[in-house]
Amino acid sequence: MLALEKISLPGCLTKSDFYPKYPAMSDKKIDTSWDDQEIVLSKMTPDTKFLFDRMTQATIDAVQAGPGEEILELACGRAVDAFQLALKGACVFGLDPSDKMLKKALEWVEPGKNHPVILLRSLAESLPFPDQSFDKLVCKGSIDHFADIDASLKEMQRVLKPDGNLIISVANFESLSCKLARAYDWFYEKLKKRKRTEHPSWLPPDDHNFKFDYKFLIQKLKPLFEINSIQGLSLLWCFPYWGATLEKLKPDTAQKILKALDKIANLVPSLSDVLVVSARRKSD
Image 1 (cartoon, rainbow, N blue to C red):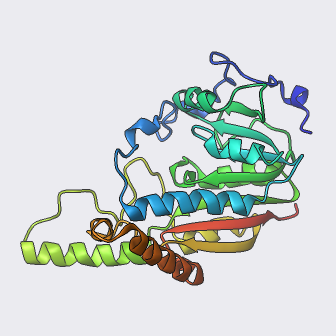
Image 2 (cartoon, one colour; image 1 turned 180 degrees about the horizontal axis):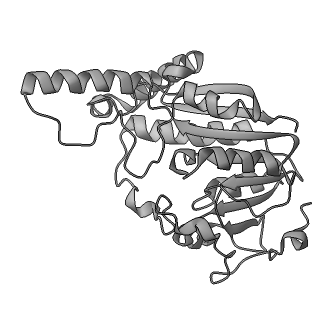
């Protein structure tokens, strides 16, 4: 069990008792008051719901959490996934830079009850843990928001135990959908003589600091980690009118199509909508 007293952390946190801010949290690239209310969808198209559910399940499955394992989830948000890992008997820490998200996490995680998740407020670029503290690290859908990926990955390697595993899931902005959408927008502008008004689906949203794809992910991981596996999830997510087309189909038919495309994505991860990578810490 990770010795909490060695890192001066309380065993559980109250609504007004968060881990002190790391000084660099004033960095303009980091939104320390980010709120997921900004991105919560009132309605999800079938492809979006399928991908979000698939991404969560694939990430949790890749972790393979076991009883007694010490696991850290970076950018844990509401800590819903961290709680699911804790239900498997793991000792889970959830870290996030946003005070608002940590407060929301406390709505899911009751300190000291059931399977607690210990919540901390800090950054991936400077983790408040001793060397070789964790069996596994999880980072779902957030690494492209980080201010400094290289510094974050070095910290992840530092706090992982020898042969510890890192699991990252991230959107692939060189997916088949992005490539087709980019071509679609090019033809649209040529034919209509005007640009589309909405943000292009093939470009990262404004709150992202990095654009990830298959090659970039491998390039960033290889100096510090041995890649165990890369899984591709979903195809055609967010291609113009794809979600609307699926909505016109019977739900069972839409699900069959989405599952078939998901199987193809797993065969060709470089073209998939989301990448889930499992990587082992390299020896020093």
